Amino acid sequence: MKNRICELLDVRYPIIEGGMAYVGNGALAAAVSNGGGFGQIGSAGRSPENFEEEILLASQLTKYPFGVNLPISEHKDNQPYVNVITKHKDKIKAISISAGNPSPFIPIFKEMGLVVMVITATAKHALKAEKSGADIIVCEGYEAGGHNGGAELTTFALVPHVSRMVDVPVVAAGGIMDGHGMAAAMALGAEAVQLGTRFVATIECQAHDNYKQYIVDSSDDATTILTRKIGGVIRALKSNYSNKVQKIDQAASTIEEILPYVRGTENKKAVIEGDFENGWASAGQGVSLITSVDSAVDVVKAIAVEANQVIAEMKVINFGQSALKN
Ligand SMILES: Cc1cc2nc3c(=O)[nH]c(=O)nc-3n(C[C@H](O)[C@H](O)[C@H](O)COP(=O)(O)O)c2cc1C
Image (cartoon, rainbow, N blue to C red; front, side, top):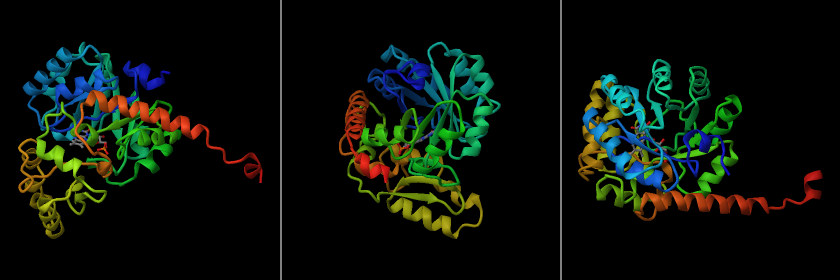
């Protein structure tokens, strides 16, 4: 059965790979799309040239639709990335815009014929994005890996609230790792799920093996917020390095004091070079649910199958008619 997101993105399963800095590569996006979901190539941590290469690679590896992610404030200049997207607009189905004011960008991408998704973390921003023309609102809760919204709203609080306020379809992101999470998100009012951390621990992801293994070995309390006091909310894996960053954050009085420790270069050290002593790596709170590195094709299918099963089992729960009447 196809819902509005399946129609808009032309996918079999409403399962989206969120944009990911450094590790959202073309082969991964293609694998997610080949599995029946919707893969996306991240632009954060990539030069415009490399971003273009990954788009071309994805288009060679899949015949199914895929998208790209533009985290506005991550780039000093967004124009070169917009130029790449314009050049390859016929290969790209949708764009997700995050980390900044999407309003000036939405008409540009709509004009290109792309489906526009906007990542939001409060109802206020969701309403603003809808008014500005977003086709899909992604509600990203505080459980999510990477940069979180300052309001620190959880997926469980954010998704049902925003789903009631906007008319366009809503995607739930943050803390969803499997079919149980997907079924729960759909019960809250989402029409699709967006996952990040689960797709890092896949064969096709370009992340370093140390990062993938770190995820597989993680317990339920494995993540922390790196720079809440001064540098914004970044959810990352706990490590000696994260302890150091948190101490510096506590002692810091200006953003300049903390920024050298949480830049993209320090992120790259861990996620691409596997050096967890000198770098940090994003991960969502549900990380302990990931127990193996698998093909992203299989991950998408397994989530869809499990979600279906969970929903079917929920349908037969009988609370008892007489109990409900009283
Ligand atoms: C390694 C990593 C890098 C991320 N980088 C970005 C990014 O560049 N742009 C963006 O919009 N979201 C980014 N995110 C957020 C994801 O797109 C997604 O919304 C989030 O991971 C969902 O929560 P989960 O990690 O609990 O699945 C990142 C997440 C991870 C785990």
